[in-house]
Amino acid sequence: MRCTPPLLLATLLPLFAGCQMLADKPVDPDLGTTRMQGELSASGGHLLFKPCSENRSFVVNDAGATGILQEASSLADGAGDKLFADVRGRLAGSKQANSDGQLDVRRLYRLEPSASACEDPNFKQLTLRAGGHAPEWDIKASGKGMVLNRAGQPPLPLPFLEEQMPGGGLNLSSEANGQRIELWLAPQRCVDSVTGAVRHLRAELRVDGQTVHGCAYYGGARDN
Image 1 (cartoon, helix red, strand yellow):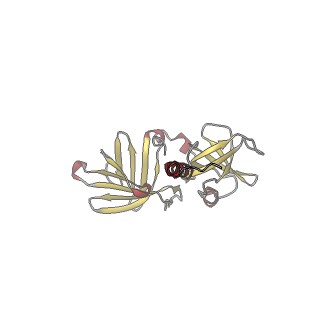
Image 2 (cartoon, helix red, strand yellow; image 1 turned 45 degrees about the vertical axis):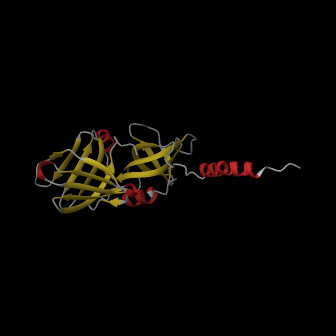
Image 3 (cartoon, helix red, strand yellow; image 1 turned 180 degrees about the vertical axis):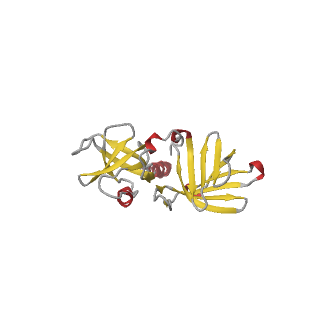
């Protein structure tokens, strides 16, 4: 009977610990997923997703517990009504009844009643869009800067700095034109108070000490 020398055991212990750490490393739930936009409709007791500019449709499976099934049911006024959805997920190739497969949704960016969102010419250029009501305001951000629109005032183009915040939040700030402007974004479900549209970010806009609130979502130029 052979015994392993104590010194050899001591040498192997860090190796075993390293293997355990690798085995316990969390798996990224977004791995292998794609961001996509399209229309939602109800059919045969299922929620179907039809990608923009395609004729295929996929049964929606809420794999990431995003609440998309409940959100869509709340937004739709009646059977057959279509909604626009911006999601991240994975398409499964196996066909199901009356569909071309299954869409496993991992993240919900936005959901809104709209017949024209698929044709939005600005979506792919934007990194972020935010807006709110009472008073009306809107911010569109891209790699070229951001534009602030407010009721009764001309559009205000601004350069900005972006800072990642703990917990997945963002801060966009600008001090151009003698004004201090900050847009704070938190990864929280947000519902537009006028349209009922669902966004994945809650927004807070501060202009020279005055604060207004709203919702926001990532544009097509931001793939996360």
